[in-house]
Length: 367
Figure 1 (tube, rainbow, N blue to C red):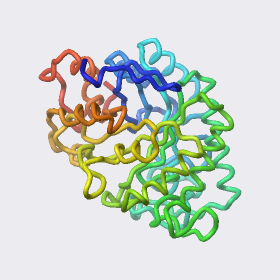
Figure 2: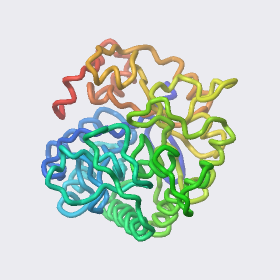
Figure 3: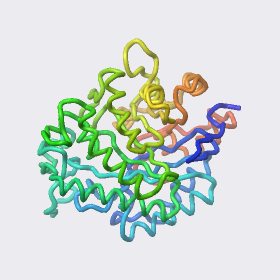
Figure 4: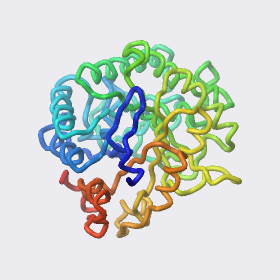
């Protein structure tokens, strides 16, 4: 059997195969509420054969958390919509977790022109991704930090009540949690800052620990992180395996069960003198299951693809070899599943030539 379609037998999360739908922002939730169209979008991907769906980023109950219109909330009336999504996905035979998100300083003025709510970040430093369109953030006080942590806890508890199979914390790509990790956006001199990477993990570890205490020991916490950032694609949190270890161990000890290691190209080595990618190094350091992601089955990375460059389906025998060698445990598919919800079934049945290739216009709808 193709290793992609072997069960994932982790005590806290049993999956029918190793395929994960990656979280992908779609901005198709009117008034931030996921509707029936959103539920059908996820249902089709579950029917298409993925083992686990990680939802698009969904925003925690805090006034500063949203960054753009159309992104779903994870509070209030939106929870009714998410219940419909959970039920549809489970009925179709897949597991599902919400990605809990706070954008921090990636908050665009043109998205909320009437807003009087300030953007929050580790420090009062504008995010490089939005330039002049960005709100200048305020540096979070300890009271602000406490309030945001409680918002994450509330969202995680609501996810458990709705019947989700766990949660994912979005700690990647230069959003709020990552703004504490990244030395560019974190110039704090208190206990939430510091010159070394390990010192800047405190905000994340307090979120993880608080959630773990609230949801118990058997509700999975997935943590997504990245080296690259929006607007800084060559950024690196960790320059060496030793520095990566100093970053990961506090997160692991706080209660992370699975690490989701976001890269733009999964086949690129993370450090010199080793072929291991970021997920491979993370698994080696922590012993925890990892999810790899980044241009799986496609010949170009996401940035080029979203700019309109045509992408083609490619061979991924290298991926299967790495999975067989237990470099990582799970494989996340992004653009491939936007293009073709039945990507997994077609791969399983050897119908690679029938897979619909990704094109930029597909982002305009929820097919």
